[in-house]
Length: 203
Length: 203
DNA sequence: TTAAAAAGTAAGTGCTTACTAACTTTCAAG
DNA sequence: CTTGAAAGTTAGTAAGCACTTACTTTTTAA
Image 1 (cartoon, helix red, strand yellow):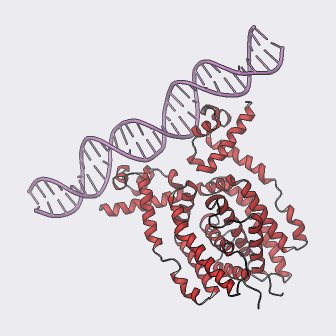
Image 2 (cartoon, chains in turn purple, green, orange, yellow; image 1 turned 90 degrees about the horizontal axis):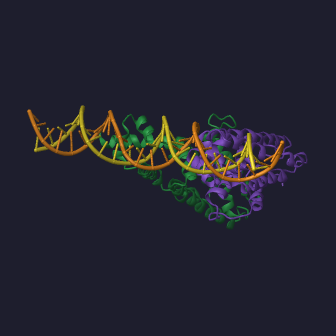
Image 3 (cartoon, chains in turn blue, cyan, purple, red; image 1 turned 45 degrees about the vertical axis):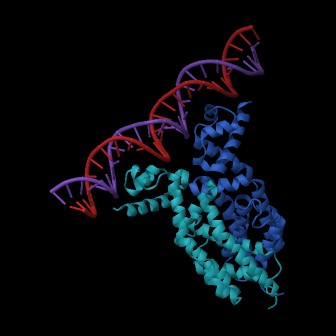
């Protein structure tokens, strides 16, 4: 195996283990074992355990960060298609989290252990969501379409439904013991509840 | 200091450290240091580190478990006072989590590390919430007051707003950089959104 | 007053950890 | 072929871990 291939393989093993056991809970020995090499090889590719963690940051930043947030709903935002705006954002998030459940765990470990991944995610994903959505909501309030609730509170309710459902389906209730539905159904249901909850009663 | 006093003190130090650094991330040496005793004293009171963890379980179970879930909203449920039912449950949860932010962290560490505290919490707190509320919701749907959405999905939306807001205020957005409101305002806002979101449009 | 029980400690044990030095194997270019 | 760099290993190191043993000090009750 070439150097780059091996480096990549070790990185992926590390992502898997860090997401399962956290940074502190993962040993370099275990990483080496799972990668099928000696521990010394891990340290040939990554000077230290925490450099390995930072390599994961870079990798994850490249993988998801360049997704140009909300470009794909800008059309719906422009057309003021309320349902489409919220439905697409939820559905996209649920699908992404389901495809990459490791990332959710990695994120939570990082948040609890106080590493940078959590900050990175908040600044690059959560904060923009709050900004874009609360701007859209206050615009629709000025249009007289939404009731005058605190826009940030509405976004928190929205993000809450979304994240909590993701965490449930990928972490605690994997087999759907409490609730088993498709992402489309969930996205539709949450969007309906939210929109009816904040719309002015004009119909 | 008497034996019981010392035991209690060590227990509380352990709760604080486990909630901060997780089970694996907390050393018995650190616990002893913070308690101002030698490490041997920790092992005199608790045979092992994991017995110490289980003592915390018992302690937390006694502290919160006997709270007789939903006794205090049974009146509102009987009277079918929708607002009061949801408002009281959210407000109570937000206040409890704010008073004891350690518990949220302990819970999340436990969920990620696969310890029993998370299961305990889910079975004794989350599952009953789902049962009581989805029963109430389907009853109100039969009354023709709520729209026919999946009751469990509604509860998930509800719990999502609640838990996510708690986690935000106690973990990530402590100083209210993203959103700063009182628990009463949050509870009122979430309840309004949810109820308007699921009510039949008869007004 | 005294003896024994309880509270507390110092100094370890053997194992695991992140990390390293010194060595061997593989393999493609000259 | 041969040679030299890259891929790989073995066998460590010092520090840190949960946990123990053998000891000293303090408190309490007869």
